[in-house]
Length: 434
Image (tube, rainbow, N blue to C red):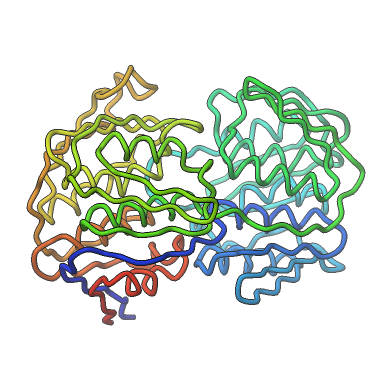
């Protein structure tokens, strides 16, 4: 079976308007939450991304009715819930583990295959498993997947060793129908987590967001279907702003609230970007060029790990030596060899650079990078290992001399809404080939 590749030529400044829809990281979690409601739930402003199709197929295999119509997804629980996610979904994304709690509520047992997703480092399931066990579930992790049983989940106190987004979402989805009160200490507070909590609240859940990363959930007997408008994807918004900056152009991004980009905007401004921000859109330009910076990724409200991939390419076109310190995933820099092949002058190290020692200090994780700018990039034939690396490959190809061939583009389309069409509209010379 032949795989599609993209051919990209240096295209000059990218200019135009891009509208971002709801985020990949939010839409699939809301689809899982809809399992818990009696009656239909509707998600508005949904993106057209591969992740939606994968999650919809999983839910349909369990007995959930899913209808996708342009930017709207409607979901409703069918009369019979099948507690087993088929093994055909092994490794496709990280959503199956979030279905454990809902399936325990609906069927008293659950089986989900092993999770997948991008190869950016260990995202262990032990936080999820321990949380469910502490709520009274019997959980067995096998080579092929995870089995769980529970007559009724009970509220409890859970302290997460690290503010994991996925584990926080698992607890939210499990605690809303559990007996009694659940308190999460050390919870993730990313906008997508809060957005999920607000949707559950619309469904009738009782959730309190407290200071110091505490979330308190009082279990209720039942939830109802609800509707929500998904907020614009902050990863996409940042990525397209960088696409304008790196090519000496200007992209105006619609649909993502400024408050989701606070840290990103300031980071780019320190590098010399100038912003124009309204309630409806924001845009960035760098008429005087870009300068180097030192940036450390962190959990929210810090600089998001998913923003560092386009930022790394931007560093190659900024004057001077930039430093990137990744503290969230130990293997996030897996995409660097592809960029090096295109002429990006990047060196990666196993020490903490550009910030205080992180949890990967004294490990073999190569999680810091030094980038020399301005690098002269050249077209190359590269294979993209994951979603965010895919977008960074497009950015590098846009400023490289000659033609680039990008393989593995299905990764990009799993996470970015109509990304090929968006780039075409901005003036990128891009074509598809089998």
